[in-house]
Image (cartoon, rainbow, N blue to C red; front, top):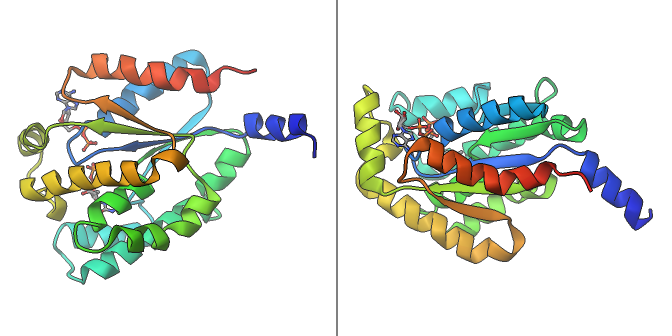
Length: 219
Ligand code: ADP
Ligand code: TYD
């Protein structure tokens, strides 16, 4: 295949935008603002999240809310399975959407696993366990919204009745550190942008748009 033909296939595929950050960092808020922008620009998109609402995702939600207990290794493995199903399932798998040219925006992808699960187990194990997802679909861009864990906890406490397993402050501090370790480790194989999330939502959204808008410029 000629270089030009290869380039055309790349350009025809949808973009895959992954939002990352600790709990309460403002991912959902920014995804909402981004979708408003994409609508105005007439760009065809699909938004989704992990954990998903599949049966595997439901099991994960039960664990996160304390209704079911299991070992941390099992939780990490369930996220691996949920992610593969997210990519490949017949009904709304995101890999098929990307191939048909739809831009997909996900609230969390494999960097969440690298960060959250490497608090309790070696990061290399987590990276290896997620290798198949990475081989199938790497984000065109990963947008990491960086917030101070104190701010994140205040936001969560203001808005939620229960605190999920991972939302305790000391854990969020560690998870944030793990995100940075993962970016350091994989920086040359991934396209990651770090956005200061300790500012008003509209200011953050402008910065994100500056990073993302160029993805949609056709050569
Ligand atoms: P996440 O999806 O990362 O958990 P959310 O977007 O749900 O985060 O934000 C958590 C809470 O913080 C929400 O109540 C939201 O309205 C609020 N919030 C989000 N972004 C900001 C911001 N930049 N400044 C102040 N509050 C924010
Ligand atoms: P959720 O309520 O969806 O949180 P948020 O709105 O902040 O994304 O819960 C998802 C939780 O699952 C969050 O604490 C991060 C955690 N998580 C993992 O531990 N591993 C993963 O691979 C993913 C995708 C999420």
